[in-house]
Image (cartoon, helix red, strand yellow):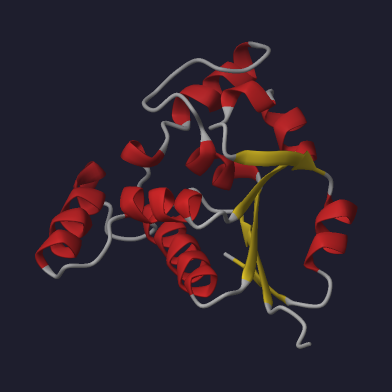
Amino acid sequence: MAEQKKLSIIAFSGDFDKLTAVFTLATGAAAVGYEVNIFFTFWGLDAIKKKQGRAFIGSNWLTKTFGFMMGGLKTAPTSRFNFFGAGPKIFRRLMRKNNVATLEELVEAAKALGINLYACEMAMHVLGIKKEDFIPEVKDVLGVATFLQLSEGGRTLFI
């Protein structure tokens, strides 16, 4: 019996275009039978926040400020040509016009495909975020060593 193919992605960025790449690769791989693991760290954690929009989540004034700046998928900026927040709106319109799944649709597809979503324990401590702040599909909170064990035997991408 052939070993199952595996793709693990480290989602470091909270940028709209980079998160779109993360979820496009993840859903494409899952659709053709890969085991897919996504490890969200630092700004990437924004993609799995339960509360969308700007919210003061965190344990002190500094982490609450970071929590406010991390507004979730709907406020994720593009990495280039953000045009004061218009960049993601332009991309969403172009995606719909060209029958390409939007970032939000890709996230829903990832959930439906059973992609394993993990949050980085260390980044959560730094940013003052708790597991309860994430969508219920987040499978677990992991340290780097555990994520490396899960990733073993497959390909790993850093986005």
